[in-house]
Image (cartoon, rainbow, N blue to C red):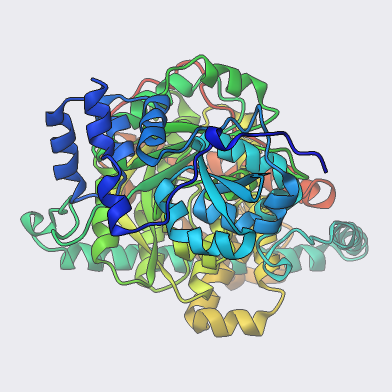
Length: 638
């Protein structure tokens, strides 16, 4: 195989690490100061603050002194007597790369380039990692030399050099037994069509018996969900009584003094988001955490030319970078995040959506909690609400819906030690745990809920933090239905995936956790589908004949009516408590219209079932940046 020529002078050998070589090698700060790019005072200040941060000096100088990647790289060339390579112009030898393997290239941020005579050139992003692994390289390749590359250059080169391995890591890293990628679409289609046909035939033969059976199923689901909501109300009341006085609940926004503050990587998946980029960058700039410790990754698909063009025309701050995801067999948010995870710098990984507006102290809050929480707390989930709550009726109802879920249901579920189905944003993980769990399921369109259950099955806990992110409420009916149908489809596929081995699930979650899983997933899905059966009870309310009047008698009608009234009372109480806690009491009159809002869920459920038969992995994207939706308001004002 012919390999392009590179002279020894072009990439000087790096001496073996020793006390002498470390003393002789000039300091990075001195080089930059001599070049007039920074002052001695800036270097001293960065070094002083670096003692409390787990961050490289170069990253601090990018953030605090505004140095470019080229300036840092030029200084590193001089410090290490190594030359810079452009892997786009001079690509690496694929055989050498395969010999080293993708896993090590990712871990050590390196790429074996080419052989120059008897030596092998190893291109690296961080010279100290070359020194750390030099003995391994020499054992594998013989004489080695170091060259320098940028992080962006490495990412692009890895994608081109290991296309199949990269695709496998982003799509099938999670074992098939834990993934929904083997979803039996044909079998499910046959079951659904058979069920519909059977019900149609049964209705013709015995309509009353069929209607009664469906009513029993619908009431069972309603009773289960009402019980869960009632428990959430009860635990919320208990918690409010146990809550300490306000001064004692002040969150310390710094980890203990003996710990260094970590780098936090924030994944922000984008797809056709040209209208949202400016808003997003302004909101993330408000985060009150050292920007040198923020690794904000805008994750974009390779074929999303619209967003990539928009970002290319935008001046990004030093803490923000773009990660381009190569094409694959599916186009989903979890697949994109799996790919980006390999290039994250942080030990904590968070996820935001494109339209999110997190509270400024949110990251500091997360870091503080992880610093003192036991290792079993692997995930922190923040609250979600909306900044366009006043836009129209649908946005108001959606806001109430979220207030109930994040303000009442999830805290109740957490207090009962049940598994928490995560929200898709404002979630933060210990990175090593995320890796241990197999990352996200690239084929699940509600990867967040699935991961929440998997965390619980592995013995980890999710905690809810007292910090809110404002989002853009879906304020148009059909886009709302599309979004909700994706959630329901993902919930259904998550349920089937985890119920492949019910005994194992029981063992992993325990009796109470198993029961909670059934209620939150199965009962929710059943209620969405069978809700029209319950709507027929309005006939009784208006004194009209009902198909079951004769079969049930007075006491049967009274019992069912009582259950429906109880369920409605619990719903109203839950909504009122949630709005009071969220500081949105002005929305209380709109609670009375929630029944109309929830009716749309049935339409979404039907759409979800159809997609599960024909397009199970289709990601029906939510459109952001709707005109009029970016008027941000406080939680108190709505």
